[in-house]
Length: 338
Ligand code: KG4
Ligand code: ZN
Image (tube, rainbow, N blue to C red; front, side):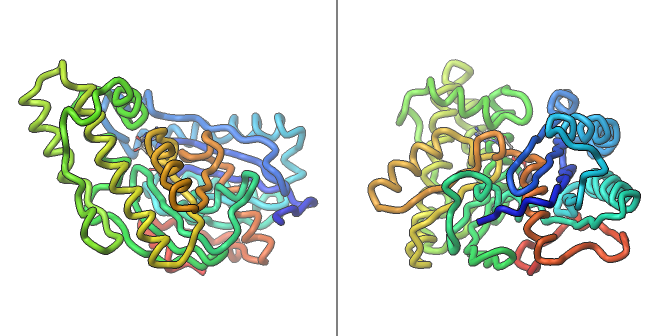
């Protein structure tokens, strides 16, 4: 369906703390990600200025590496896609200026891609690809949204978090449990050894009847537990937290499919790598007869492959940034794109 040989697209992702680069020609030829996690760890979160500077350092070597692994040369490129937003302004500008400078020198088009569209379409890089329309759950460090996806550029927001994103809740809770940054994967790991049901946390908005979420109250509940129960209970608390978040996410996904009369769910974004979420969705899918699609696991978190792929589809539609004039959009609603 997405074969389009004869094009060779470079994808650049620099919206936050990962430098992602990939080449795509109708199939993914190569991709590489440099994570800045260890650099930001000491500060307990992403330092925007450090992020920008590190993207500058990484982009050229990563691009060389990816092209060489794909067995292609810079001159073979036919287009470049980069993340235009949402994200950190300085970090986005590094990717955008690199992409446009290279595109200008090669006389090829460049196109700015919405980061969430990249995540949303990333399961289409795997086989079997989900056919449109589907419900998409976007769960990352910055977003928790349910979308109805009719096709490329046809996205309707069904509901989203009113406060913290799911990944943010994972990260903040992990910090309370002394697990470092970003703590989502470590928290998930710790929860595996926790006793189910020893503690019970609230399921925020699970009965609200709509498709909105709220996760900021959970960290306060966790903090209270941590103070009361002490370090020996950390694994059980982690378990209680993960069970609460997963139950809410699954319930809202099921509700979104029911309300929309759809039986296909796409899960994208970093939290989509979470094993407890995957297992709970798998059980529910079997019970209710719907299908769940994920990107391959290394493409759940930020990467250049999803940007290269979205760029290939958009360039094929004939879109590109005019005259290499570019801007970035640190804040950008997915629904406003076409
Ligand atoms: O999509 P992503 O790489 O970046 C954003 O666009 O935000 O998502 C990163 C988020 C972080 O909050 C991280 O803790 C979370 O995804 N995450 C996980 C897991 N892997 C990554 N959360 C829970 N379980 C995981 N296995
Ligand atoms: Zn992301």
